[in-house]
Image (cartoon, rainbow, N blue to C red; front, side, top):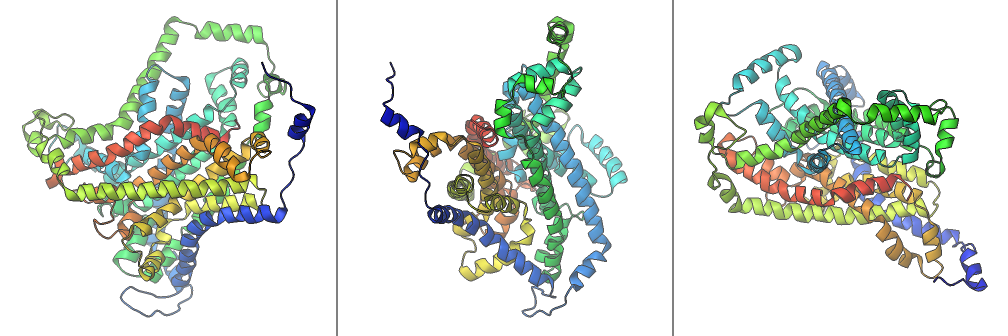
Length: 620
């Protein structure tokens, strides 16, 4: 039986905490921010400033000197019709792909939220695309739409290709394969974000809202979207960013096969192929207005949300009496809802439709992995001897050409070790640095904390092509080329900004009462280690999984800053094999064994990943 507190102890617990000297709090707070800001802006600010200076010259790789030309490069770019074609292509592809990612992701999130009969299968498979390296997935979708061997649908594919390219131009069919990959990957993270948002909505609000909405569409449009609008905004921003970064790297990820002009292809060609570094610098800086506009739109949308205290303390009466859903008549509406939703053919048809949709989407997410497994045990002769050229089934299992050769390949194991070291280092360092920065921004009441958090979040959108050449020069001077340290540092710019934002929003909303009481008997460091960390571990997992997804789908940094197999990771090492039909089984087996460890990690952390995203945007 609990004992009553003595008056002395009660006064001690109820007394306000003595405020630490302001200067000490500022020193500690800004000191905790230094690692994150040094890692991110130290690797991004100088390259951007250097690119600005370089864009005002006629610098070329073949020449050691350059001449100041002012805005001549920008004038040449604006007068180049190919540039405007690239802008139009980039905008069109980004818009279409973003819409597809959001639509598919929304359907998946609603199915998981409603928990259809097959929701466990869909729940497991939806986490695969974000971790699965995009270079591997792009390979799968590319060869499905352009079979390297004769298949039962080859003639149909050729006819469809001629039809599509007759409408959109040459290479439209290849771009379609890339768009499928980007939609497959982007819709995964969109679905996860939206599902986390839907799970944060108070159930009592939903129950009363269902009574006051005349149709499922009105319930979705007037209730679900407004209540989850912060997650919706974040999902749209992430979808746009994923699509934009995918198409910037399309030339590299397709191994140079897709040459349709988009911004990334033009910059890559001018900078790393033609050696026109001054012109390429100006070309890469034309992306900055797009990035700035995206940030200016994204941050207000993400921050425009109801106070968590208001959401938590709101009652059903507050929502219904305010007129948001109209007048409330519980007996009539409740009876009608029960009558229309209970049993009968209509309910069976709805459940069947939901289950079928879940099955189709689960197959969509699982298909690249299934295809890779089949091809890894299928010899090239099987395409010729199998009935009708069937590529989706192995009639004769052959482990020798793929699995055994891969297990005996030292290059594969070296790439696997590199992946473990680099990814593990980035996750450990990035999560630690971001955790300290997010805690300082949210808890220590630093002047300008909101803008510091926004600036760090904005760094997530900086185009990779805008910083590659300056960083190469810095790395050459410091001896960081082709080293673990070099690639880890550049990957931290992909991991730290978003992770810091997650921790910042989490600690900003988390009730500090427990920490305040703990500070009565312990130091701030002890409270952080024994109270803060145990409560924040789901957010740590979410930050780690997001970072792994970003790294596993990067090819630009990995190819530029890792020059040989001594430091190259599995995505870039196996990416050099995926377009070689002569090494068909080897390539697929290498992809399979390279992806499986990442997928196992993703599935093991899936539940904690979702919980971490919910915790980052919801008060406990």
